[in-house]
Length: 391
Ligand SMILES: *Cc1c(COP(=O)(O)O)cnc(C)c1O
Image (cartoon, rainbow, N blue to C red):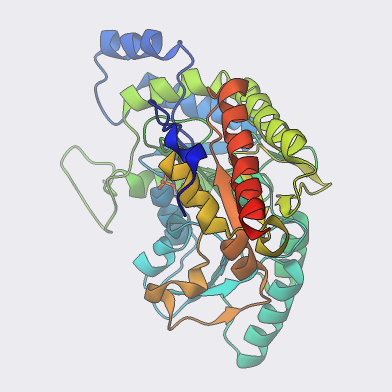
């Protein structure tokens, strides 16, 4: 399909979710340099952990090199091991579930509910009951807060409690989001956050493990620093990891954390602008917001119904790409990934449908209304072009 409207390729690419510095980062990086803690430890890391504990409400936090590392440490500290199963959201990013395989465990995937796009607590309850019948309970449950919308954590905790199965919230995408008045992930046995370059706030790369269980965080801290026993020489009784966050990157994280509320407002405004201006265009729907919380709208996600819109989701994506606008399909569910084809899954069709129809639109907090209008008008033009061709 060649269209005249695509002839005007934007000279500057509009990215999906690029980093957006607040201006305060360089000052804190300079502080880090002045202290000479050019190390995976130091005052910036300590301050970042304390500040993150304050905004998230967790009793203890551990800053690490990535969200994936934080998840790995969480599962290790909960004793996940070979032969174990870990029940996880199927609609997620690989970093949520690869740590289970690092520990020699096997993931089992749970589909989403329509209203939140997150792990369906009823499906989880069915799976747990079946696990019980088989006499093999999972070692952990890992629900993802997808695109910054919190999973129904209280229901998930309630379902898991009678079985004594711990919950690790994958809140990597949900920094700044809220669930029943608490920060995303608060209340789970442990929660994982990411500060990768594309997330709502970034250190360039980094993650946080948080919990109300101070001893879990202290154990993770020990393991994240090569499991060095307290001794002047290097003494090791177990194998650890090198997962600490650099003091320089923590400086960036602190400056980013200081503007988190503004970022959430900006992301939500971006979403509303798309929605308002595309309302009335047939065949377009939006990611719902659960009543129990406040989504950070990390990415603005739209659903394309090819019957009413007239064009498949991927045609929209490719047409935007032709104009130098980055968009992406919704996460490909883990139960459809070749690497997990041997894994059990409890599927209801929701995540597969979202993967087929969902498109993540440019959502960087620096995007301007005029850039958004270009995207909005282009999406409308894609539809009209097709509608006219069919006449
Ligand atoms: C980004 C992300 C991760 C992993 O975080 P990294 O910091 O990139 O390792 C895990 N889970 C989800 C849902 C994510 O979006």
